[in-house]
Image (cartoon, rainbow over all chains, first blue to last red):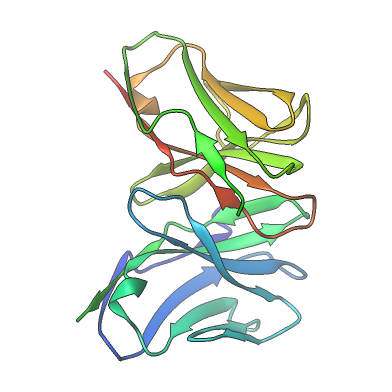
Length: 111
Length: 113
């Protein structure tokens, strides 16, 4: 049962433009959703989260939007920088200690 | 800064060997996790532990076991390695139940020949 699904394995964006990474989910009412970022040869690191009682959370250049009716969330990066090039994982956090990772989207920001 | 250390960056083993992957965290975290990462599949949970000597199966526990004798150390054991266990293995820890932040090690790339 895929609880979160990232349909785009890769995304290429020009430096300075907006990056939008998408994620669809199933079976969630009162959970948290997270985004993690992973560089090659490193473990993933926490980026930003959103509670299912909110529809938006912002942290600097990163904003996550949650559309509960569509069961969809998206991560916006504005403006995109070459250092943002990484794999981004959408994660569902549930039952207080369980994390379900999506398959990831590889973002390439071109200088 | 939290540090999660995995004992090996690369490991090559033969089919049928017993393999130990070690993970140590230095921040007194309650929870520890073992994931494997495969292309197109994201991270899949093998086992996690919420206390010393306590463990719970994840989504893909078959062929693996774990040991947590001390709070800071969580070991993943492949009893008899097989080629389909060739993967990147990632260890993580989190402070306590309800905390959404996982802290990962840099991973062990295991090849089973």
